Length: 544
Ligand SMILES: Cc1cc2nc3c(=O)[nH]c(=O)nc-3n(C[C@H](O)[C@H](O)[C@H](O)COP(=O)(O)OP(=O)(O)OC[C@H]3O[C@@H](n4cnc5c(N)ncnc54)[C@H](O)[C@@H]3O)c2cc1C
Image 1: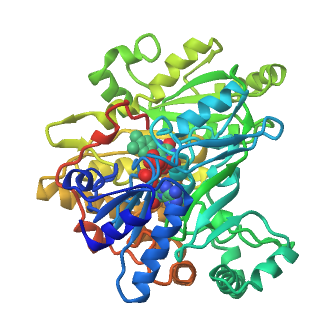
Image 2 (image 1 turned 180 degrees about the vertical axis):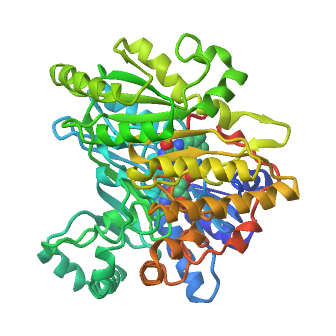
Image 3 (image 1 turned 90 degrees about the vertical axis):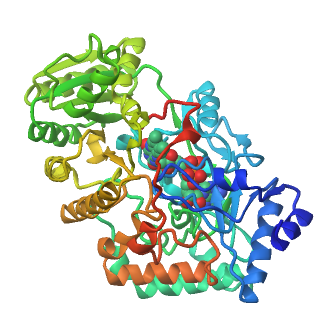
């Protein structure tokens, strides 16, 4: 055991492990990258997190940098849950639901709590957390906060950022802060503090003031976005100030979250599902644009394409039985309404009428068990993700771009072209309502040719998304894989502000370095795995 590990073990309540097995386990997340940590810390409480950060800060002051990477369930697909120094794994101990207020629906949790467990508890109280990711059964709330995760209900309800009321965060030097929206007066008090927190508020306030014009225009014109730092929501016109939106989506690069306060929504278990089949991508886009204009938003507009249906039919034909038949529609869409019953009937009629103009077939599914069978077709992307023949695996390298809804068809057609140019099998699924699509090409990463193809496809794909006015990540975050595209996505002025923000919060570059900021494709290429697996997830069939 190294001196650092030994010191930490003596001072923390939680465990510190350095064995080869443990380091190997934490050397992968669900991305195509690999990086082994020097040690793994399982913090028992916030004091453990503070002490670890304080120690790393003191070492950094003496010129020795030991990075800290916070980790939830390690389901990150961009390599953000990997680090070379201290891996701080939250699910082991800091995994409790601390408080639920039945009146306001507010819930307070520790970051390592399993998302599915929180959701289950909330549903027994008639509430739910709408921006749940497809990985909710095996991922954590801390990971969802750090990635600004979202999912199939985000079309109506928004992303994780919209649900975070406040956070407790351990800063790079071990200080703890609480975040929530501050009035102008409360901000003045913070600006007067002599602590690191005060320094941080002063520097950030000045930076945001100086870059106000660029920041006001920085956000891509998309309905959801997890790329970069969310600068635009920190200061508001009324002079209020909140660090919460900045920490959400920052992937552990600005601070370590130790407690999360979230808002929830009422849950209606009696939603209605409309299934719609389209024979062209263009018709599907027209339908989505019309559905977006309905007086009541659908709670989900999801899709799978004919290629995905073909793959599922080959691998597991029973999955599609009596629901979709050959020849498969170009796009199969799932449109859900979760309004209360009377409003639901009215809006369903309107939606059906709208859809009839564009579809080859629509079907209303009201029975809940039947709905689940249909939803399983949407979630059958899991079969593709989990499938592999030998070393050829579906790899998450280009899985999360989002474009303006008017560019949905151009996006899909562009993706098909990239796949066909590279002789790859294409299957696309995801959030049609948000034009946020997922796809994972089949590649053998042990083959030099496929490794080169991977980076060619990555480059073509992110350039396509940006050329359509989109963002490189709708929900999964930049991590390491997408971070090299941030300067191009936001331009040099905003990227310069991102770098300054990072330096304000983390002057010694201790917090998850190599993620989001100052990442080059060359550094990422060196981390590419030669055998891709998602064995961490094999307890479940990973929905995606
Ligand atoms: C099959 C599959 C489907 C997926 N579907 C979706 C989806 O629908 N939507 C979506 O958004 N994502 C999805 N993801 C990506 C990922 O699962 C989610 O973003 C998830 O919320 C990450 O949670 P986690 O607990 O695994 O976090 P991890 O992977 O462990 O970490 C993710 C990031 O959070 C940081 N982090 C973790 N805990 C803390 C903390 N306490 N403080 C500060 N930073 C912290 C890590 O450093 C890392 O940067 C999917 C992944 C897979 C494999």
